[in-house]
Length: 176
Image 1 (tube, one colour):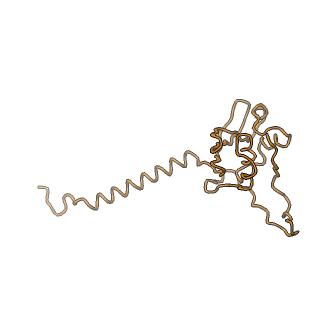
Image 2: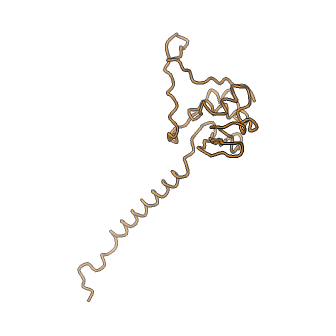
Image 3: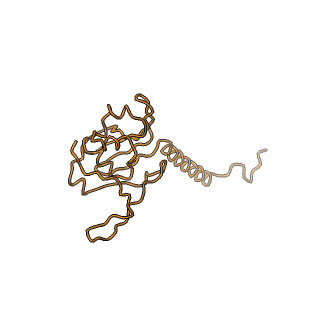
């Protein structure tokens, strides 16, 4: 794996820039469980400097706000071990990221999961890198809720339209 400069978020109140002025600290990562499907991440400077392939995509993902700096992968990176080394990750417990699907150079799917023991993992979230942009995939229950809600809206609209155009049966007429 090629070494790319990876610096964890600065814990100081600000970072001096070249003019000795204070830059604003990036916002802290959102708390766990926060829906981040509405945002994306792209670092064009990094993409211009390094190829996006299966060996470097995790380094790129680690720059995004989706990355959890307390994950097992980061512990491996600090020990200079490849962060996706399954032989090392399977012996650890906690949150980890795995490269799930790869269609180089356009699509990479990364899964966030919780490892309880070497054989038992619980999927948490899925992220994808599509042509250099990182996104959080929506959870399946949210996709179903959205689709069902949209279908119910269109059914309701169809019934309203149909009832307004149909003749009222029995209105002003006697059935006997």
